[in-house]
Length: 352
Image (tube, rainbow, N blue to C red; front, top):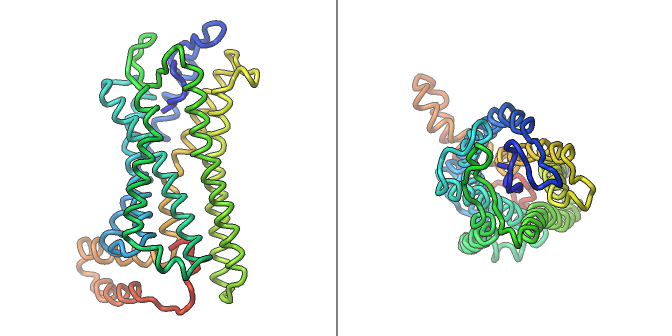
């Protein structure tokens, strides 16, 4: 969904000094985006649904971290539900009416912003658990997690309002579109505001929080006596930061260049076409981050992997492999070991 351009990738862009043909961009999008969006939807939906099922059925939402992980998965699922519609839109045109255009845009933006905010909360949660372990025992409660999650959803809705309000479906150049349409007399203000908001909330703020929190975590981990756990946690920290940076930075750079084309001398037809193509690629790359979230924040952790194994043994193996009695005998033993706290040291695992 290239929401940034009010006259999107269809046929002609009259925002240039001279009318700019966008037919090639539309043709490339029609071939490239539907299969890519389909893959993102399938892998993201399966991964995040597994996280939700395991948190509810196995972990029983017993900690603030569980609450944030559940809300992150719900945010990603909300975001992912819109992707099949954008895939159809890229292939043909918008065929779902104005109400669905606004509703799906709301899901898209709310899922986007809430996902980022819950990643920030998870980062702060890990910081408190490791750097301020004594204080965290009192502060990191389920109740506090529920309250802060509620506030986070409200903030995500507020951050999404401009995108929801100014989005509508209409016919343009023989195609029906679903895109942002800012008021003509305030067009540049809202376009700049939308881009700066996306850049600050979607890239600058989370990276700033990660740098501050993970710097403190690294200092604490370097004093940890358990060298094996320390190295695993340090590697995971850098993985989280690098992955987030690689997935979101290209998109935000292209978005910034696309908004301020005249400032960078890119307000000509060939540059505009290249920016639209770059937007398609980088936005798809950014979307795939919601597929990576379950891997980074859940399945990387040994405990969560054990829960996943128990879940499959209890709910999949019993149904599809009733003759495999060995799995059914092992499941209770593994379940009891998963639910037991086995160490007296502070939990330094980042992967939960």
